[in-house]
Length: 191
Image 1 (tube, helix red, strand yellow):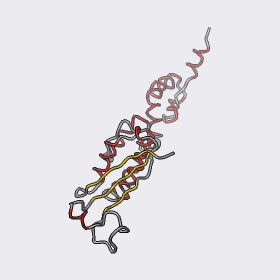
Image 2 (cartoon, helix red, strand yellow; image 1 turned 45 degrees about the vertical axis):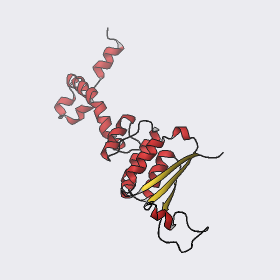
Image 3 (cartoon, helix red, strand yellow; image 1 turned 135 degrees about the vertical axis):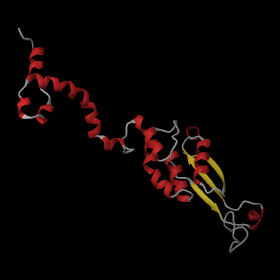
Image 4 (cartoon, helix red, strand yellow; image 1 turned 180 degrees about the vertical axis):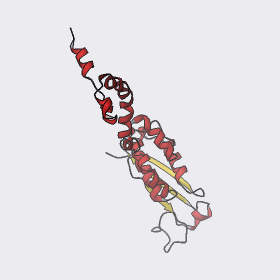
């Protein structure tokens, strides 16, 4: 007596038979034998079919993200949310293009904190007007104190406990020109 499972085995044929000469396509044993290889290779074929998704930061599997980050020379902070990691990797080529500029620093901090920072560059040329209405940081006394080539970064975040000031400082240090100094102010947004 033949059971259902024996029937399934007897009629089971590999899709690989289509690649063999016609003489082997009708052989039941060859069809079942090729099923072994098909079962082994099927997961690999699925990965190859979806390979483009592995290299896209938006669709890459969680375990693949650190490897993608290493491609662009990025060390990931494990405390970053997964969405932030994906967006940062996706934006790195553009961020490298703007490294050392206000735009690059602003975008990097926006991705990390979720808030666009306020960046004020202090320019120390003699101002066209002096006194109470002069532009912030343009006074001659500030230049004499050695504060030339400096800027200020202000972040108003919803919750200051979720954003690590040390990580923000590290980002600024990586992105700013070497000869510049900065001040950082992280404050909580008013409700």
